[in-house]
Image: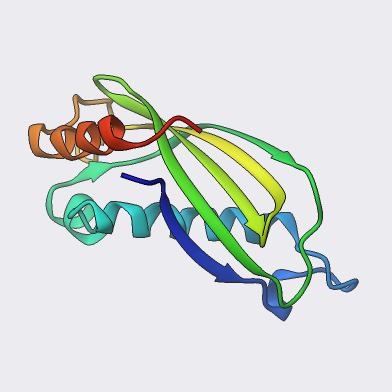
Length: 140
């Protein structure tokens, strides 16, 4: 399986007055890409969070900005699962404008119970889907 891939366009509201991407907008995009990826695995957030009460908090987010994005840019987001633990995982994001690398991020997410707010083991079906994605994702 290839990395999960999706696109977003930088709009006026995502940029500063100079027309350059405002970095908090990138994190908003990142969250949407993450949510879309879960849906592609068969676990929409409404199901995980509201029905099954599984939380997915970010406990670490390392970001490296390499080039500016500008209003109107079509951004390609690539998401890879690089590590799967019993209660957490690490996602690697690569963001490009055409062939230009704009930024990268590594995100550590922990499975939690929304009842106790404590970490939990990945539910078996969720872990199986994550493991399947991990096994078929190429090294980046």
